[in-house]
Image 1: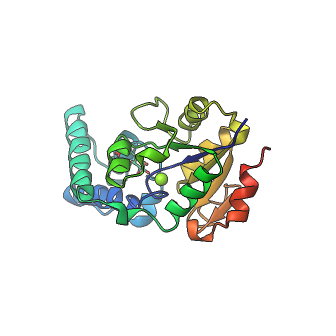
Image 2: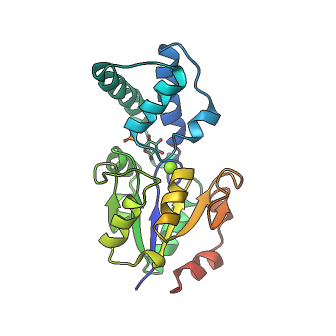
Amino acid sequence: SKTAFIFDLDGVIVDTAKYHYLAWKKLANELGFEFTKEQNELFKGVSRKRCLAILLDIGGIEATQEDFDRWMREKNEDYLSYIEDMDTSEILPDVLKVLNYLKDKKAFLALGSASKNAKPILEKVKLLPYFDAIVDGTDVAKAKPDPEVFLIAAHKVDTKPENCVVFEDAVAGIQAANKAGMTSIGIGDAKTLSEADFVFKDFTEISTEFLERLTKAR
Ligand code: BG6
Ligand code: MG
Protein backbone atom coordinates (compact mmCIF):
# COMPACT_ATOMS: atom_id res chain seq x y z
CA SER A 1 0.00 0.00 0.00
CA LYS A 2 0.98 3.65 -0.35
CA THR A 3 3.10 5.27 2.32
CA ALA A 4 1.26 7.49 4.77
CA PHE A 5 2.95 10.32 6.65
CA ILE A 6 1.36 11.10 9.98
CA PHE A 7 2.16 14.45 11.56
CA ASP A 8 1.77 15.43 15.16
CA LEU A 9 0.57 19.05 15.42
CA ASP A 10 1.84 20.87 18.50
CA GLY A 11 5.61 21.33 18.30
CA VAL A 12 5.88 19.65 14.88
CA ILE A 13 3.74 21.67 12.47
CA VAL A 14 3.25 24.76 14.61
CA ASP A 15 5.08 26.22 17.55
CA THR A 16 2.17 25.87 19.98
CA ALA A 17 4.14 23.80 22.50
CA LYS A 18 5.34 27.10 23.98
CA TYR A 19 1.76 28.34 24.47
CA HIS A 20 0.73 25.10 26.20
CA TYR A 21 3.74 25.59 28.47
CA LEU A 22 2.85 29.22 29.25
CA ALA A 23 -0.74 28.31 30.12
CA TRP A 24 0.31 25.49 32.48
CA LYS A 25 2.97 27.70 34.04
CA LYS A 26 0.40 30.44 34.67
CA LEU A 27 -1.88 27.98 36.43
CA ALA A 28 0.97 26.55 38.50
CA ASN A 29 2.05 30.04 39.54
CA GLU A 30 -1.52 30.93 40.52
CA LEU A 31 -1.61 27.80 42.64
CA GLY A 32 1.66 28.87 44.23
CA PHE A 33 4.39 26.75 42.68
CA GLU A 34 6.90 26.69 39.81
CA PHE A 35 6.62 24.71 36.61
CA THR A 36 9.81 24.35 34.61
CA LYS A 37 10.61 23.74 30.94
CA GLU A 38 12.13 20.39 31.91
CA GLN A 39 8.91 19.31 33.62
CA ASN A 40 7.03 20.48 30.53
CA GLU A 41 8.77 17.82 28.39
CA LEU A 42 6.52 15.24 30.08
CA PHE A 43 3.44 17.22 29.03
CA LYS A 44 4.20 17.02 25.32
CA GLY A 45 1.81 14.70 23.52
CA VAL A 46 -0.12 14.12 26.73
CA SER A 47 -3.86 14.85 27.05
CA ARG A 48 -5.08 17.96 28.82
CA LYS A 49 -6.62 15.92 31.62
CA ARG A 50 -3.48 13.88 32.22
CA CYS A 51 -1.35 17.05 32.13
CA LEU A 52 -3.44 18.65 34.89
CA ALA A 53 -3.22 15.50 37.00
CA ILE A 54 0.60 15.55 36.66
CA LEU A 55 0.73 19.29 37.37
CA LEU A 56 -1.27 18.94 40.59
CA ASP A 57 1.01 16.09 41.58
CA ILE A 58 4.06 18.31 41.07
CA GLY A 59 2.45 21.01 43.23
CA GLY A 60 1.26 18.51 45.83
CA ILE A 61 -2.25 19.82 45.44
CA GLU A 62 -5.41 17.86 46.15
CA ALA A 63 -8.35 18.86 44.01
CA THR A 64 -12.06 18.26 44.21
CA GLN A 65 -13.75 17.31 40.94
CA GLU A 66 -15.03 20.87 40.79
CA ASP A 67 -11.52 22.38 41.15
CA PHE A 68 -10.20 19.97 38.57
CA ASP A 69 -12.85 20.89 36.00
CA ARG A 70 -12.40 24.60 36.64
CA TRP A 71 -8.62 24.45 36.23
CA MET A 72 -8.99 22.42 33.02
CA ARG A 73 -11.28 25.15 31.70
CA GLU A 74 -9.00 27.97 32.85
CA LYS A 75 -5.90 26.43 31.27
CA ASN A 76 -7.70 25.99 27.98
CA GLU A 77 -9.11 29.53 28.04
CA ASP A 78 -5.62 30.94 28.61
CA TYR A 79 -4.22 28.71 25.88
CA LEU A 80 -6.93 29.81 23.46
CA SER A 81 -6.20 33.46 24.21
CA TYR A 82 -2.50 32.86 23.39
CA ILE A 83 -3.31 31.28 20.03
CA GLU A 84 -6.13 33.64 19.12
CA ASP A 85 -4.14 35.70 16.62
CA MET A 86 -2.15 32.81 15.27
CA ASP A 87 -1.51 32.86 11.54
CA THR A 88 0.58 31.15 8.85
CA SER A 89 3.75 32.77 10.24
CA GLU A 90 3.64 30.22 13.09
CA ILE A 91 4.14 27.26 10.78
CA LEU A 92 7.55 25.87 11.69
CA PRO A 93 10.46 26.18 9.20
CA ASP A 94 10.26 23.99 6.08
CA VAL A 95 7.03 22.27 7.18
CA LEU A 96 5.28 23.61 4.09
CA LYS A 97 8.15 22.49 1.89
CA VAL A 98 7.89 18.93 3.26
CA LEU A 99 4.08 18.85 3.02
CA ASN A 100 4.20 20.08 -0.58
CA TYR A 101 6.92 17.61 -1.50
CA LEU A 102 4.99 14.65 -0.07
CA LYS A 103 1.72 15.80 -1.67
CA ASP A 104 3.56 15.97 -4.98
CA LYS A 105 4.70 12.38 -4.49
CA LYS A 106 1.05 11.41 -3.95
CA ALA A 107 1.70 10.12 -0.44
CA PHE A 108 -1.13 10.11 2.08
CA LEU A 109 -0.94 12.84 4.70
CA ALA A 110 -2.62 12.49 8.08
CA LEU A 111 -2.69 14.38 11.35
CA GLY A 112 -2.34 12.48 14.62
CA SER A 113 -2.70 14.86 17.54
CA ALA A 114 -3.74 14.61 21.18
CA SER A 115 -5.21 18.10 21.03
CA LYS A 116 -8.90 18.91 21.06
CA ASN A 117 -7.97 22.23 19.45
CA ALA A 118 -6.31 20.69 16.39
CA LYS A 119 -8.87 21.56 13.72
CA PRO A 120 -9.25 25.26 14.57
CA ILE A 121 -5.45 25.58 14.66
CA LEU A 122 -5.06 23.95 11.23
CA GLU A 123 -7.70 26.36 9.98
CA LYS A 124 -5.87 29.37 11.41
CA VAL A 125 -2.63 28.39 9.69
CA LYS A 126 -4.50 27.34 6.52
CA LEU A 127 -3.19 23.78 6.46
CA LEU A 128 -6.52 21.95 6.72
CA PRO A 129 -6.67 21.16 2.95
CA TYR A 130 -3.37 19.26 3.05
CA PHE A 131 -4.62 16.36 5.14
CA ASP A 132 -6.40 13.26 3.88
CA ALA A 133 -7.32 12.34 7.45
CA ILE A 134 -7.36 14.13 10.78
CA VAL A 135 -7.34 12.26 14.07
CA ASP A 136 -7.27 14.43 17.18
CA GLY A 137 -8.07 14.51 20.88
CA THR A 138 -11.78 14.38 20.14
CA ASP A 139 -11.43 10.97 18.42
CA VAL A 140 -9.32 8.90 20.79
CA ALA A 141 -9.98 7.18 24.08
CA LYS A 142 -6.42 6.22 24.91
CA ALA A 143 -3.82 8.97 24.80
CA LYS A 144 -0.18 8.68 23.62
CA PRO A 145 1.98 6.66 24.43
CA ASP A 146 -0.91 4.37 23.48
CA PRO A 147 -0.73 3.83 19.69
CA GLU A 148 -4.48 4.34 19.17
CA VAL A 149 -4.30 7.80 17.56
CA PHE A 150 -1.83 6.67 14.90
CA LEU A 151 -3.57 3.34 14.26
CA ILE A 152 -6.86 5.17 13.62
CA ALA A 153 -5.03 7.53 11.24
CA ALA A 154 -3.51 4.57 9.33
CA HIS A 155 -6.92 2.96 9.12
CA LYS A 156 -8.52 6.16 7.81
CA VAL A 157 -6.10 6.38 4.89
CA ASP A 158 -6.27 2.60 4.41
CA THR A 159 -2.54 2.03 4.91
CA LYS A 160 -0.82 -0.66 6.95
CA PRO A 161 1.08 0.54 10.05
CA GLU A 162 4.41 -0.68 8.60
CA ASN A 163 3.87 1.73 5.70
CA CYS A 164 3.35 4.71 8.00
CA VAL A 165 5.92 7.30 9.01
CA VAL A 166 5.26 9.45 12.08
CA PHE A 167 6.74 12.89 12.82
CA GLU A 168 6.72 13.63 16.56
CA ASP A 169 8.31 16.05 19.04
CA ALA A 170 7.13 14.20 22.17
CA VAL A 171 8.63 11.20 23.92
CA ALA A 172 5.10 9.83 24.43
CA GLY A 173 4.43 10.30 20.71
CA ILE A 174 7.57 8.44 19.63
CA GLN A 175 6.63 5.59 21.98
CA ALA A 176 3.11 5.52 20.47
CA ALA A 177 4.52 5.36 16.91
CA ASN A 178 6.94 2.59 17.85
CA LYS A 179 4.18 0.58 19.52
CA ALA A 180 2.06 1.01 16.39
CA GLY A 181 4.87 -0.59 14.36
CA MET A 182 5.46 2.59 12.36
CA THR A 183 8.67 4.39 11.42
CA SER A 184 9.21 7.11 14.05
CA ILE A 185 10.92 10.38 13.28
CA GLY A 186 11.72 12.66 16.19
CA ILE A 187 11.66 16.40 15.63
CA GLY A 188 13.73 18.06 18.33
CA ASP A 189 16.50 17.08 20.71
CA ALA A 190 18.29 13.80 19.84
CA LYS A 191 18.93 12.92 23.51
CA THR A 192 15.32 13.48 24.59
CA LEU A 193 13.97 11.59 21.57
CA SER A 194 16.54 8.77 21.55
CA GLU A 195 13.81 6.11 21.16
CA ALA A 196 12.98 7.38 17.65
CA ASP A 197 14.20 5.61 14.49
CA PHE A 198 15.55 8.96 13.24
CA VAL A 199 15.86 12.38 14.88
CA PHE A 200 16.19 15.79 13.23
CA LYS A 201 16.43 19.15 14.94
CA ASP A 202 13.72 20.48 12.65
CA PHE A 203 12.40 20.03 9.11
CA THR A 204 15.18 22.16 7.60
CA GLU A 205 17.50 19.23 8.34
CA ILE A 206 15.42 16.71 6.39
CA SER A 207 16.56 16.22 2.80
CA THR A 208 14.27 15.40 -0.11
CA GLU A 209 16.44 12.28 -0.72
CA PHE A 210 15.56 11.08 2.77
CA LEU A 211 11.84 11.74 2.20
CA GLU A 212 12.02 10.04 -1.18
CA ARG A 213 13.48 6.91 0.44
CA LEU A 214 10.66 6.88 3.00
CA THR A 215 7.99 7.01 0.32
CA LYS A 216 9.31 3.76 -1.19
CA ALA A 217 7.39 0.67 -0.06
CA ARG A 218 8.91 -1.21 2.86
C1 BG6 B 1 -0.74 17.80 22.52
C2 BG6 B 1 0.25 18.65 23.26
O1 BG6 B 1 -0.58 17.96 21.14
O2 BG6 B 1 -2.08 18.14 22.88
C3 BG6 B 1 0.00 18.56 24.75
O3 BG6 B 1 1.56 18.22 22.95
C4 BG6 B 1 -1.45 18.94 25.05
O4 BG6 B 1 0.89 19.39 25.42
C5 BG6 B 1 -2.38 18.03 24.26
O5 BG6 B 1 -1.70 18.81 26.43
C6 BG6 B 1 -3.86 18.36 24.48
O6 BG6 B 1 -4.14 19.59 23.90
P1 BG6 B 1 -5.48 20.41 24.08
O7 BG6 B 1 -5.37 21.47 23.01
O8 BG6 B 1 -6.61 19.47 23.82
O9 BG6 B 1 -5.49 20.95 25.46
MG1 MG C 1 3.69 17.50 19.89
